[in-house]
Image (cartoon, rainbow, N blue to C red; front, side, top):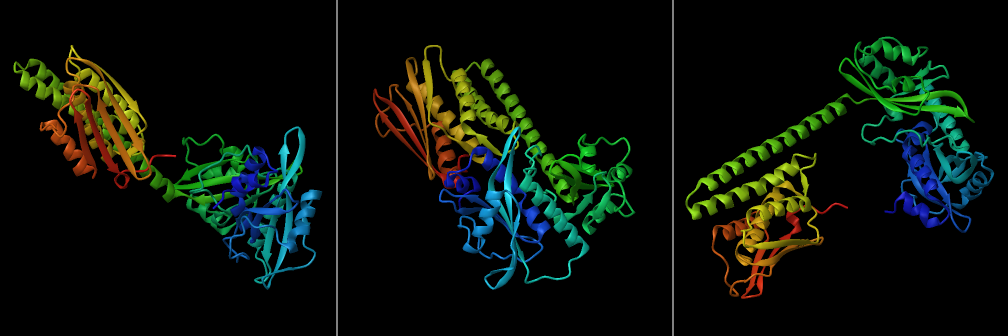
Length: 495
């Protein structure tokens, strides 16, 4: 499905600033739909003087008119004149009589979407239409009347270029207050003129036992906040309705998220809408996740430290060993432990349990160059391609296997000579293929080592990663080892 940006750019008449403005407005489409109890559609002009729908939001508290998504559709003939008039005149245009849509009586309002441009004249970049279902008309409640009034104020701000406000911070959709969660209407002095039942309940749970209406929201909030508790510096701006901001307040173990939308009439502040939502459980879950992430990072950090301690003990033991065979075995064990430590060190630095394997392997190569090369051997390592991001349970065996292969290439293929070891990574949507190639002495074709390192590599690649490994050797031409791993075992690369 095309994105709003794709649909807008496809018309060939909008700039990046227009797209950003429309994105912000579409982001508040649910708020407008819920306040108006109507479907909200955003239209942009086309090159042939028509209009195309680029966003559509259904109301959550009323019946929708459009059971099929109309995004990408051209404006229907019965709305075309009304939409064009709103776009050309820059004024809100209401339908003169009920409009029938698929045997349902509706009322349509066309609102020009005006983008302010600072000192430059504002420009109309599209049209917002409100489609109200008149088939379920009933005597409106006080809450519905207030919601409709708020919607009308916001529509007026859309037509005057005062909404959306690009200076307002964007926040994750998860947990953002909605009209149905709780709505407070403030006058220009910050006094509550209306509070929905959900809004009142949220403040009651925080310790306010009276009615909100007629009270200053600043004084109410101040009375329930615990003493000596630090609070967000933006809180006074939010509860007075002076700034389009978001913040949380906490009292008696209850956390309520607030979002303020100042209301203006051609530049004059006339009050504000304050949306509120009890997010206590959500914040508790987020805190648990943060604690869990911190614990996991600390575990990886401690595992890394313990592995480095083991590696250091093996290094000391190797230096004190009088047997060359024992010294070599201890050194190889130290290298393997250090390679695993590199993966845990990377995991301890981030929140995700995925690792950038290119970074891990670069650090492992430095370790190999330090340990494997003998005084008479000069080896140059070169990496081509990218491995991408891998989950930790696969990064460890792959890092250890590649460490073994590169070490064997340096210690045996290039022993006593000068040469190069090349590591080539090729990643597609289905497979990860890694080739380790050296230009050393090589081995007779078909002959594969039978040492511990070879056994380790086979176990890791075939057993843990479900892949295959193939050795190609030729006397005097070096050795080439190819690892092929199906990506059903490995997470896809980012981006």
